[in-house]
Image 1 (cartoon, rainbow, N blue to C red):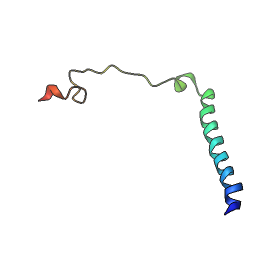
Image 2: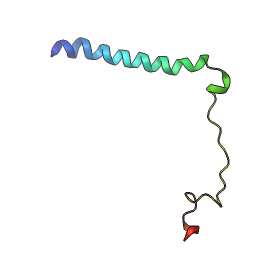
Image 3: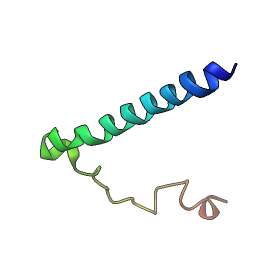
Length: 57
């Protein structure tokens, strides 16, 4: 059990960290339109039931 705790578990944590670092860093090489934040559209509050539940009673 100590072999797993001293060698295998830290290696697995390091692999997960490096994979996450790679996934975040790869955004540099994406085209500019894919790296941009998602567009925010305007919501019509008069017809949106989830935003105005009181008006529907």
